[in-house]
Amino acid sequence: MYKFLRASMLAAALLSSLNSFALDGAWRGKLDVNSVKLPLVFNFSTTQSGNTSCTLDSPMQGAKGLKAVVLYCDNDSVTLEIRSIRASYTGKIANGMIKGTLKQNGYKLPLDLTPEKSMGERRPQTPRAPFPYRSTDTTFTAEDGTLLAGTLVIPDKPAKGSPAVVMVTGSGPQNRDEELFEHKPFAVIADALARQGIISFRYDDRGTAKSQGDFKTADFDTFKSDAKAAVRFVKSIKGIGRTGILGHSEGGTIALMLASEKVPDFAVSLAAATVDGKDIIMHQNELALGKLNLSNTQKSDALKLLSMTFDDIISGINPSDIPVDKYISDNRLDIPPYLLTSMRQSIAAGSNNHFRSLLSLKPAGSIRKIKRPVFALNGSLDTQVNSTDNLAVIKKNMPKAVTKEYPGLNHLFQHATTGEITEYADITETISPEVLADICSFIRIL
Image (cartoon, rainbow, N blue to C red; front, top):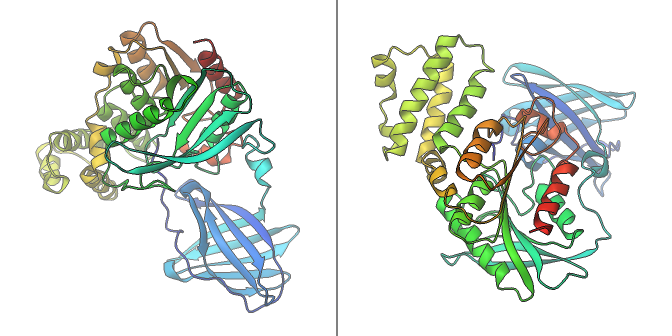
């Protein structure tokens, strides 16, 4: 799907307090890091000895339980030290909030904290008991012998030959719920499917959560092969009817490509990339450059450089051997030094098997071979996979496919304002109820 935002606030050391004042509970605030609102959560608790301890979460980055040191805590103030990154936080406690400042490397950033809302308030769609279905954790074997772990969900009273769906996550190491920013989209989808009599199976990516294997050495074909093995596993279960794939983002592309090979009986594609991989990644970079204070020439030149280096990566050239400086000189490209440093990091990512395979991806040729039923969905505010461009490829190559664009939905199919990644964590909705209903209806009428 998208790449997690990085900030320097993520490491820390054990929290122990020399004071006895209890500041129990979670407190949330937003740190303004280069115009990015980074949510941080301080989790305070009282030890058996009566001291105050704390851990730090960064939901946007998927980090939990980071440790720090509490230097002082009484009924009106608290001071924390995050020594490994040379940072500290000091706040005054008053009127139900903590007004404070985070200091690091000479910078002072305001950070006010308020009591955290309950998970039910933050993520109201997350399934909660009692459930009218059975969830069974199990394993299956990938084609290369790797043991992968997942959850099979079966309604309490399934009809004979009930349809089943295998869920495939987007890019990046994802667990079976495709969990990010405390949202659990696949758990929500599985719950909705089960309530409509539809069986589902979702699994952790290899090298993630309870699945074995190495995520770092895997590429697109590896994940496609894992999805194929998951379908075969579900089809081997007695009493299950037609079995399809529901994939999100990269997983949606996998669903379509396996449908072209007649692996699933149907496919549901949530924001699948169907244009060439390079074009998708160039589009994402163009949007990112548009947020920087650059001239039109600088933006254009940066895209030219990325295009040339991506072509080299696709051709098999090692990123360290790409003559970046020569390209800049020969083409007289105007790229600010700070931007060039960041771009070199993006180019270096080409040594990653997964990134290289995504750059080289050309799905259109496979899509036109699909004979299975397909439902392709996109949100109009998707800033990661352009809705118009990608649905157009499906409509052109699969005129019989069911396609739908949802106004106002982002890449995660949440109702959004801008569709930017930075909104994801603040939106309480995990996935649009309309999308859930449409997916269930498509599968039930097959």
